Length: 342
Image (cartoon, rainbow, N blue to C red; front, side):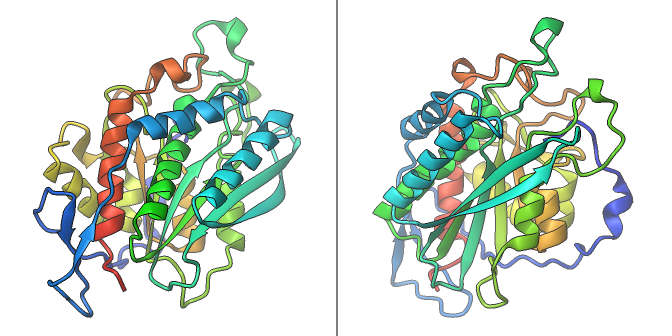
C-alpha cells in the first residue's frame, strides 16, 4: 500500500451505481445466526459460524516469516509460495499458481506468482478475498539511513492478511459457508519505487493485482459478487476506516462490514468516517476486474500507516493476537452470513 495518495480525479470511473448484493445479517450477536436469502428465505434453518482462532492465524504469520523476507526473485520467496499453496490444498481448496513477469520501477524483471485457492469452484454465488504475500525489498521508512536498503520482514504488511485468510480457509473445511470462496494471495504488491529512486512513472505498485485483474478467468456466471482486501490487519491498536476507493466502488458492502464490527462492539477499531485516499490492490480489482472490493487496512488520517510500516520493526514482535481475533471474527461472520446459502 502506498502513502502516495490518489487523486479525486478518478471519481468519474464507473463506480457510482455499484449496488450492494449482500443481505443484512441482523442484530444477532451469537455464533449461530439465521441463514438468509433474498430469493428463498428459510427461517427454519440456521447457519453455524465457526470460531476464528487468532492463535492459529498467528502461527500462519510466523510460518511465513520463518522463510525470511518474501522478496521476489529470491529463493525464500518461492519456497514460501509453495508452502502457501500446500496450505490451501490441505484445507480442501482447489489451487493454481498464476505465474507472470513484470518490470519493476528500475527495469528489473520480477518473477511473480499469484496463488489462487477456490472453495467449491462449481458454485456461482461467490466472494473473493485478497491479501498480498510478498514483502518490501527496502526499509525506506527507517530512521536509520544504514537500514533503508534492507528488506522488510513484512509480518504485518503482507503476512498478517495471509494468516487471517489461511485460518478462514481452515474453518471452511470444518464448516461449509454455503457459498463459493476464492482466496487470492497477490504477489509484487510492495515493489514500488522508494523515495530515493526519483521515479516519475505510474502503476509501479500492486503489480500482482494488475496482472490478476487482467487475466482472471471468471465468467459472467461465476464472477464474485464482491471482494475484500486485507492489508496490515495484525498490528497493535489499529484503526480501520473506509478509504476513498472502497467508498467509491463498494461502499454498501464496506458499510455493512463495519456495521457487523460495531455489533460486536468494535467501534474503536472499525471507526466510522472516511479513511483517506490510498492506492492499494483493491484499486485495480475495482477498476480493471470491476469486482466491487473494499480494503481493510490500518491507516489513520493525519497520522498515516503504523510506525513499523516499511521498517525493520515490521516483525512478529509487533503482531497482536487481539487484533487478529477482531478482524477474523468479523470477517468470518460476514462471509458466513452475508450472502445466503444459495
